[in-house]
Image 1 (cartoon, rainbow, N blue to C red):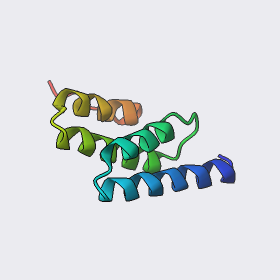
Image 2 (image 1 turned 120 degrees about the vertical axis):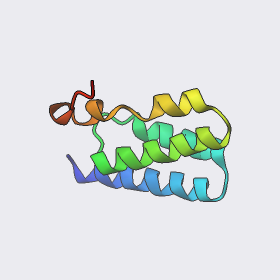
Image 3 (image 1 turned 90 degrees about the vertical axis):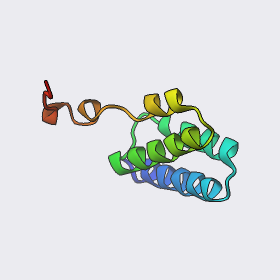
Image 4 (image 1 turned 45 degrees about the vertical axis):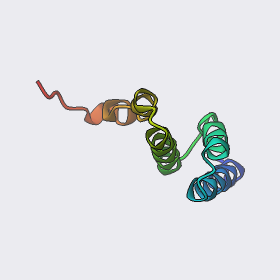
Length: 85
């Protein structure tokens, strides 16, 4: 992963987090969605962006959207997925 991409991802995450902390949810959602649109993204950055987006949707009462934002653990780590049934 290139340093430029990592720097961009970290800058977008910081901006999204800042907007989120100021309760500027519409703007934060745009920034975080743009971040998740990058093809190559560090895992920790992706997880953080998903967390903030999910929190925004929950705050606004969009429970179905919030559930869709956070992928099942099996999609994050397919090799470590466990059957629960």
